[in-house]
Amino acid sequence: MARWERRQGRRGLPGIHDYYWDTPQQLAGDEAMGKRFIEPGVPADETALVMALRRGLGSIPKMPMGGPFLTEDEVQEVVRWIDQGMPE
Image (cartoon, rainbow, N blue to C red):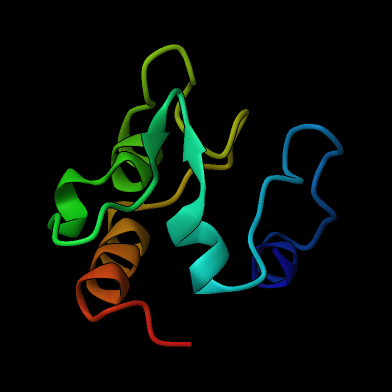
């Protein structure tokens, strides 16, 4: 979240941008709409997290809710990070 706030030059909006994780393990164990954000052994492009970043997930709109949205280059950075085992 701190990186996002630095990049955007503003604080996240309560209730909208306060959905974040302090560790890769917290993210890996979390879910939305009954789907884990990251499934072990599933390529990053097929994870609920990446789908949510690109187009939304079920009734959840594209993340982060209300934008600003990640560019495809930024999404690819997330994809590479997941595929590399989410190093800290």
